[in-house]
Image (cartoon, rainbow, N blue to C red; front, top):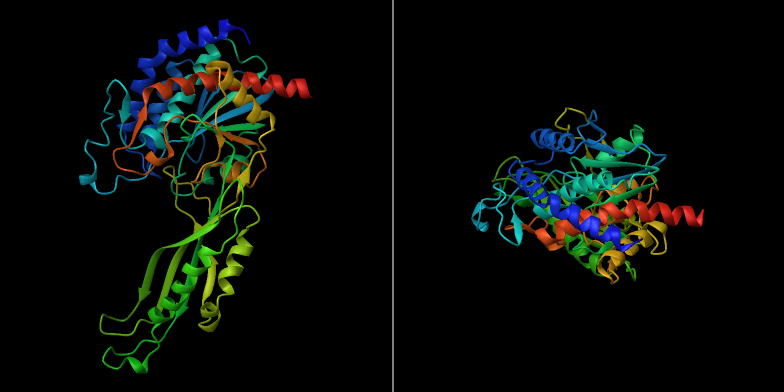
Length: 406
């Protein structure tokens, strides 16, 4: 690719930089917790239409989709537009819903995770259209919903309903401008034990479920230490994230106790193996505890319910895959150096797109992973522009590599 493209990309990105920054600030200023993204979707539709996207639509679940081009080869840029809540307000040194801006950063909830990556993708699509880089290409930029609540849910719906059929999805979650080619899977497990209530003045008459759970908790902590490891993805892990009980009163023996386990899965681990490891614990067997997967069934902001088990598989893309090489080449072309190729610690929509459906995914985004879900979240303006240029190049590089290799 000639130096002319590099100059044109730089000119286009600088031409749109103030609009890109304003768009992201507007997004941040609209609270968009999972299942409450409606107002933000309206703002995104307005931006895509103003940028002359060829088509803009909202599916029945509530995902927003903008199209550039009408070629045979279908590529998607995906970014979830929902955010987590802000936690304790006193931990923030600025209003998380203003979209504060200075010379270096844009600040606020969702800046890095991951409205910044989505905003860059929207403008990457516009640059593709401006420079005529959509030959043979249909590009969809998808603002997906409910990811923070249930990663991959939106894409299970999109793919099950056959709304899109991409050959590649670029995930715009924060990578710090590194190329990410996978991450561990995860699952949400419920472990429950039963007891027998009795008056608190005579606990020997009952069977305390909380005491039983105490023994299980100790074994779970030990189990975590010996879980399977992988050279690329790292070690599997588990942590107890919630604990609940039932009891007739504060003056009674608890007759039930249950916990939530956040289980992260590395290569070679599945839902079945992870649950069997817990079922095999001596305390779980001794107390006849039940071990089950949670299910997710919250309605979207449009009222659609897609009930799914809370199992989100591990996935990786081979570093020699055309998509990985295309993204690396685009980065090298712009910056005359190789990017770091790595993986996420957290989970993304890739669990459904590639983990369940086998559609190749590759990750690249502005923002740092450690900003996700943290107070005082921010994103580099320089990274936002860089990402928009990379996004504009990736489809062309990918299609050229794919055509060359047949």
